[in-house]
Structures are given as C-alpha cells and as structure tokens.
Length: 211
Image 1 (tube, one colour):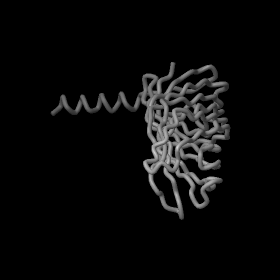
Image 2: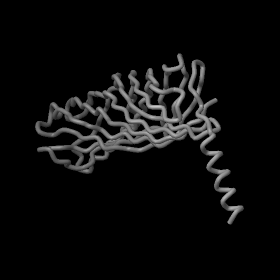
Image 3: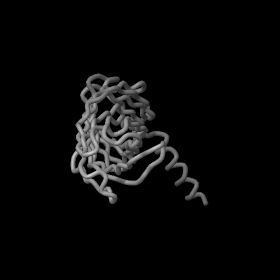
C-alpha cells in the first residue's frame, strides 16, 4: 500500500511539473488528424431543367497542416488533406431526388493565425485566410440518364477558423479546429449551367508535434 501511494504521488508530481511548450517566433510544427467537410449548400436550378437543383454531401479524410510562427503570437498555416469525395444529389421542391454524380476535391488553404496564450498549455487561436478548391474526377452516375455530363469550375474564397491546442508535453499536443470556407462553383452539364454555394463547415481533430 505504501509503495502504491508513493508511485501515485510520483506520477501526480510528474504530471504537475510538466511544463508547456511555449510558442515563439521561428517555431515550426505539424498536425495530422481527421477532417470532416460538411457543406452548407444551396444552388440555382439547372438553366435547362427548371425546378431541378443540386445538393452536395459531406466527407471525412486525413488532414495535414504545416505551421510556422512569424511572431510569438502570430503564425501562418497551410492546410492540406487527402482528396475528398462528395456525392452530388439532384433536388426538386426542397427534397433530394437521388444521386446523380460524385466529385473529388482538394481544398488547400493558407491562413494567418493569432494565438491568444502562446505560453500556456491550453492555446486558443483564431485565423483568417484564402482557400483554393480544385474539383476533379467528376463521375456522372445518374441511373435515369437525365444527367449525362458535368464539369465544375474551381473556386477561390475566404476562410475563417477558431481552434485550440492542448500541450501534452514532450513537444506533442492535441488540436481541435473549426473553420468556415467560402466555396462557390459553376457547373456546366447537358442540362445547362448551375451555380452552387457549398460553403462548408470544416471540423478537424488532430495530433501535433513541435519541431
């Protein structure tokens, strides 16, 4: 019993004595985790098919961010991810009519971030940036044969985020991040053109390491 008590006390003391990794100018770190893109989408109708619009579904992939501290409180971040695959559904009267296509996309985003407590174990931050979304490998799957072709324009838009890092010691930390990205595209198809606002909410849970 005495040994167990001493061991517990030693572990508690070690945890309490673990100091936070204070962020400072010149620091570099990376984060790897799971990232979910959940569209807050809306669209016009296809120009050649009145009352028929489109809806885009969510997807989860692996995220990678690269970060560099420009100052003690200010950093720059590059967000990357494995390609997302989004199912595209036809809509009419506010209801989904069935899957008609799917597309892959990559949304690299560069953001400037402000860390409110760079020397603490719990480090909240906020950021703003620029996103580029590239749509590729578009696959038309409409079983009815109504939609036979589809092309989507790439998108440039603003991004905003809030998040928090929690220092785990030994240069490791965990991260939770929520961001909103303005993604707008125009689709060209055999049914005419369609304008879609995808504007996703993006949630990331990741592990990070300070170099």
